[in-house]
Amino acid sequence: MIQQTVGGLLALRAKQYPDHEAVVYSDRHLRYTYSAFDRLCRHVAKGLMALGIEKGDNLALWATNVPEWLTLQFATGKMGAVLVTVNTNYRQAELEYLLKQSEATLILIEDYRGNSYIDTIFAICPELHTSEPGKLESARLPLLKNVVVIGDKAYDGTFTWGDLLQLADQVSEEQLNQRTVSLQPDDVINMQYTSGTTGMPKGVMLTHSNLVNNAYNIAQCLDFTKADRLCIPVPFFHCFGSVIGTLACVSVGATMVPVQEFDPERVLKSRRRKMYGASRGADDVHCRTQPSEF
Image 1 (cartoon, one colour):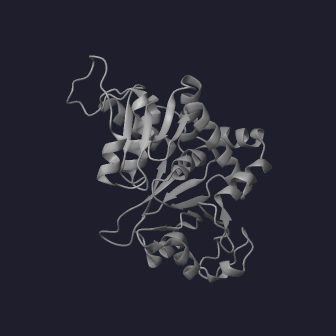
Image 2 (cartoon, helix red, strand yellow):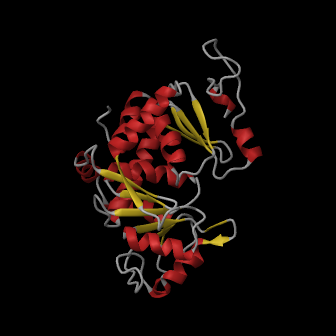
Image 3 (cartoon, one colour):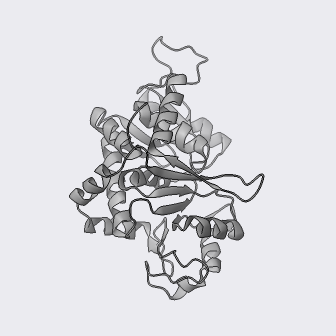
């Protein structure tokens, strides 16, 4: 068993493999080494702390596989907020139910597949139109104070992603370090909502230890190493994406190659690769790749 937090696991890999690529979004020409990605996650963690989010507070994330989702997964793992993953297909009633039950701060993208996430949150919390960011007083969701929109466009009563990054400057590295060392592997750090097949969805509470050890054992079963690069088209809001995908990679120092949403052509382009070495066969889906191919 690995006695490590999600945030601590990333920090460990950044120390071991600082110049090795951690994240590659091939369709965005976006690349982060482990050291650069760790620094970014620390910065976002400080932004969350500046919003007043404390250890153990819930943070709901309603977004596709955008880079900010990945950053928030490890940022919350460094500052102790419980990441509540939100199904991208949710509609108003489902989102309102989740936010009421989880009592979470909300971070969201603008829309997905014709479903305006912005219109949805304004329908639930019309008070946003007249609220100062961070000071929402909602009749339906009295505990919701902060809404952050991923993007540059400013909406009434909300913070932009850029605002969050600027707020990070209000929190020192030492303050983040103090928060980080207070986290324990047995602390809850993720809440996965069930599908609700036999009743209303339930928030399943998962600890750092649950996630890190599940991911590491999956990586071992798949014979993952630092040399591997994994294309991840499955949604991050599901444990398939955020544990079997992202965390399994970080558990061994492999490279994450996410796809924002599933598209066969985009996935095939992301997976284009050249084989090298004799350690793995031509039919092995986990073949090692030339870094330049992504």
